[in-house]
Length: 126
View 1 (cartoon, rainbow, N blue to C red):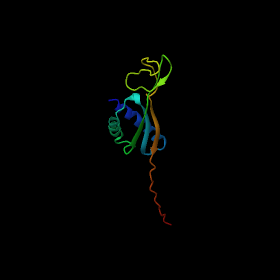
View 2 (tube, helix red, strand yellow):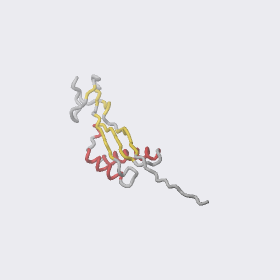
View 3 (cartoon, rainbow, N blue to C red):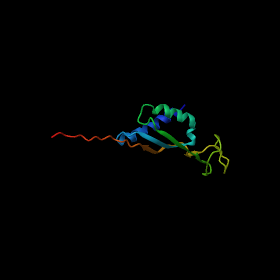
View 4 (cartoon, rainbow, N blue to C red):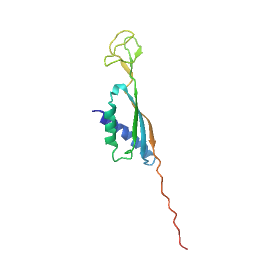
């Protein structure tokens, strides 16, 4: 199940962003995943929950949007969104094509939680 490797890559990037900002806890991660990644939402959620345990992202929420695939026909050059796993150009009927969009994994945002630091006043004796 490749959702575990995707979850680990997402978490690694988010934790890197958190470390660059003083190690603040990660609150939310928003990602864009191409349809050709063939991600099962429940599997990704399960993998992310397992991977984030014990990290500064332990309470983080993962939100993701799927980007539709876009294929360029190598015969006629038209671009189309495939209806199924068989890429048939609707313009000329040719099979196959070149992927223009749909394989990406893009982290759109990482939201960090500000932590409240407790301050204490200390009285100094004279």
